[in-house]
Length: 168
Ligand SMILES: Cc1cc2nc3c(=O)[nH]c(=O)nc-3n(C[C@H](O)[C@H](O)[C@H](O)COP(=O)(O)O)c2cc1C
Image (cartoon, rainbow, N blue to C red; front, side):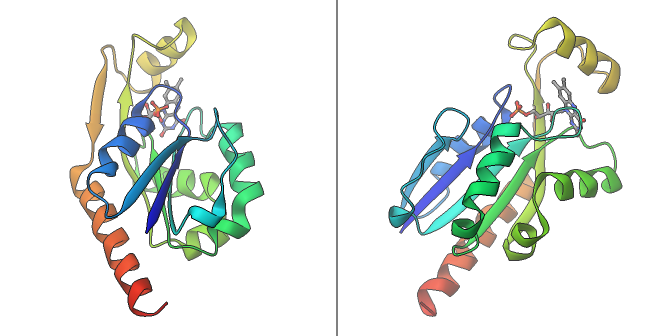
């Protein structure tokens, strides 16, 4: 069983989540930044988790392109979709998930949720720092992961893989 965790992360939160998941998933887990390396050898992948982050209402263009060109492969395998986002309200969270991941992927996935957010002021440029101060009222670096949501992602992945191995 090989899991691919494919992520795009501007300031490291989605990347941290990807690495946190490695030890919590069964089998061989490979983490890949699809902005740096888009190619995937799908013949070696049984299960996929995709993670992205929202900046100004959108995920990174490279991830949108990657999702588009790999959609048919994603739809053939158990799939988890997570998002890192500031997400002040439930309605906004819903809208961001819908914008990030197309309906066929969301309908197919065993998990589609926001798992938290992080702000790394060391890595942000002047403009992004100003946006975060204004929009999120954040002035120092922080990491706010939703542990309950991460537990749910891991449990849903395990349940989905169990079902698949019982009904190949
Ligand atoms: C410049 C900037 C703009 C952002 N815009 C949004 C936004 O429109 N909606 C939202 O929910 N979160 C927004 N966020 C919060 C990020 O999604 C959050 O910090 C996330 O954890 C970043 O993940 P990353 O470090 O993997 O890129 C923004 C963050 C920055 C720095």
